[in-house]
Length: 110
Image 1 (cartoon, one colour):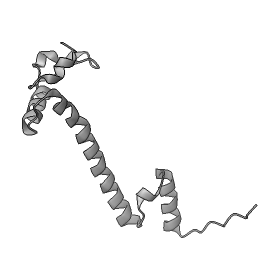
Image 2 (image 1 turned 45 degrees about the vertical axis):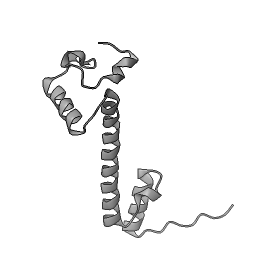
Image 3 (image 1 turned 135 degrees about the horizontal axis):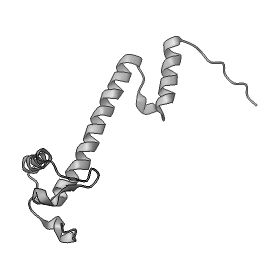
Image 4 (image 1 turned 180 degrees about the horizontal axis):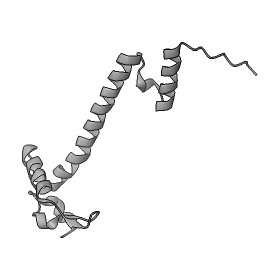
């Protein structure tokens, strides 16, 4: 398989023989190649960079969807906006204090 810069100018997916799963040391499964072909066709991709950019974009959109679902759930169940907390433990701590009604003493100034 060629790894030159010209590879990015290809206007179709390379044949299945040019794909290899180095992590598992095996050729690409036919169903994975068929999925790649369907993705290429469905999104009207013209070059390999189009295909290459599709994967991170879909991952980011999926993560954003999961986060918004989490945010809506926390808002509905606890009336807290998780975007206002730097960490999940700080959100959990605030949620516990709110749920139990416990008020922590104010520290004495030094």
